[in-house]
Amino acid sequence: MAETTYLMEDPREAERLAAKVDPAAWVDRYLARRLRPGDRVLDIGCGPGVIARQVADTRPGVHVTGVDFSPSRITEARARLAGVGAAVRSDARELPLPDASFDLVYCRFMLQFLPDPQRALAEMVRVCRPGGLILLQELDGQLLWHHPEDPELQAGLETVVKGLERSGFDPFIGRKLFHFAHRAGLRDVEVAADSYHLIAGRADEETMRLWRLKLEIAQPARTEALGDADAAQRVQDRFLEYLAREDTLTYSVAFTVVGRR
Image (tube, rainbow, N blue to C red; front, top):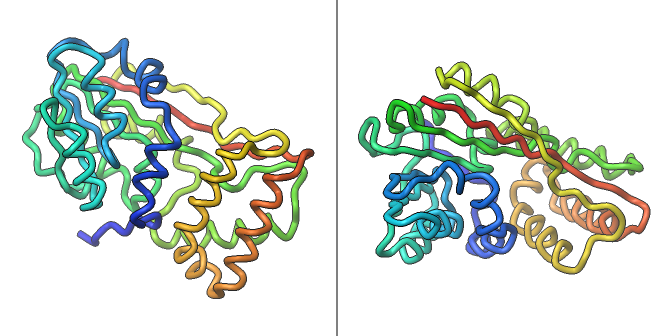
């Protein structure tokens, strides 16, 4: 199997991932009602373990195992999950975990980076017990949907995304999750769609900071996609200028799919 290359690999990525989510709000909205005391839970693409720790603290006796491909993020996740879980470095497409060993498996914003997400989902199904739940959440339209359209910016972003697609990145994977779930044999499949990255008018300071950090981390991948470091920098500068305008709107959609094995 070809090794996964995470286009956002950078020592600063763990901090960015931790800063961009409210773990208590996310768990309360998507997982809390599905969790039971003593459940065995698997977090695929756990990053630094921020959400995994919140899951472990939500119900008595819940044990969470986090999986991530990054050695640095797994180190952070192990520290966060000490006493309530474990963290394993692994490719999501080949999990070193026994069959039917988890009550609930969830994967958030990770499948978009894999060239063969269906294989990763098959592994989630394998390690989930019969009757257990699998929750998937992914973005759709990231970086691409804006109004009013800036032709130069749009052309640059579309070229970047096309380049990233060659490494397996899928900017429209969100809409595909429902079909993926059915192909994987899941039952009672539910789907929801919510706005994400919704920025109407000038972005606030924290949003600008996180976008600037994200774009800086993605600079090598953007340069490779465009074949020119100066062009990559111009796309970044123009996008940040766009987010600072009072009259613009940018957004993407987050799809959440839940099914039962």
